[in-house]
Image (cartoon, rainbow, N blue to C red; front, side, top):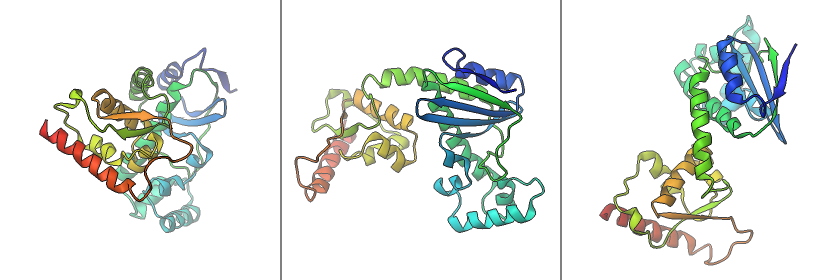
Length: 269
């Protein structure tokens, strides 16, 4: 019999804790308004998380840049031909298309980010199906993920999101450089990850678009931009419905000039 309830009454972190301590195997189905999620566990450890139906398919490995379309076709053919309880991961490793470590790094990052977003749900129906397992060709992490870290990081992000959303209420906001960074920008030193975000700020892309182009999570992009806001380097605003101001031909020159001025000012502080 399935275990059902609402995360309003029984928090996600509590449920993950019970699955881990109970050494449970099965699928956790979650729904909130128009959103859904599906998490699979093996003996209390997380092996897959999907926020959309297509995240349960092997095509995810192509979207994440781990395989090409032709390589995925080859893997599927091998999986069908060999069978015998083999997993998608094992077939990829055996065919020497990617190492187990490469698969783990790519899928673990995606899986963890998928789970972190669920901690922000104020409520939602859940159903845990005992012993339910993902399909043989599902993109499962080779090494199951401990939920202890997921719980701690998920709770930490909820606390940070509360502070960040006071200044950045939505990832549909546009971020742009200030013409004159204020005195708070003195002594700013950017880490490599921060430079990746800095280089993508153009006054047109939303935070969600920057996250997609940098392959960083929306949380990390907002966290970094929040730091830029605090330092007085940028501002965020709603995306206009109609483009106004300078012509498109002038935009690249204006952007380059402004970015160069800001970079020079930071280096000179």
